Length: 157
Image (tube, rainbow, N blue to C red; front, side, top):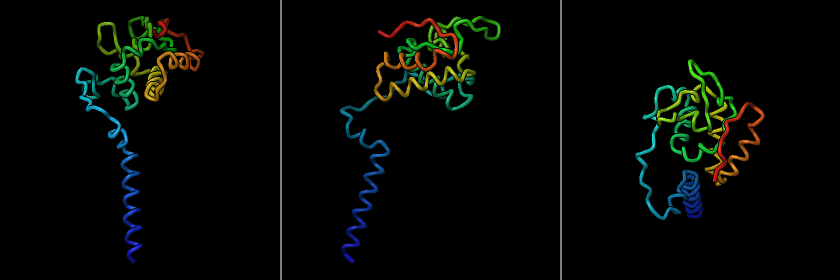
């Protein structure tokens, strides 16, 4: 009876450790300092309504807004480099322009463009897993360049 009790305690402890690790607990242990939230970067509630058509669109806008220094080096292949959009001609130079206008306000184009969001979220995932910006640019160019006219985007430093 006592051995079953001990085995039960060990099983519960093992389950708790696994749940802790899966919930990101190991990241807490590895941090050397407490990170303060960056209040200068947008959150979903600060985005214009057109950016919230779907959760995926909002994710792409948040990433692009928070990582303008990265998406400015990624080309977009949806054809926005010379696309007529409503009453104006778009002349985007990078993926950043699909999300952010030169004046810093939000560009509505990417809220309607699945390809812009695909590129942005793929780049985000690659950067989050440790790929360099140069490697991300190469992969995006290789994967998407056949889908449409690309922007004339500078290479990352």
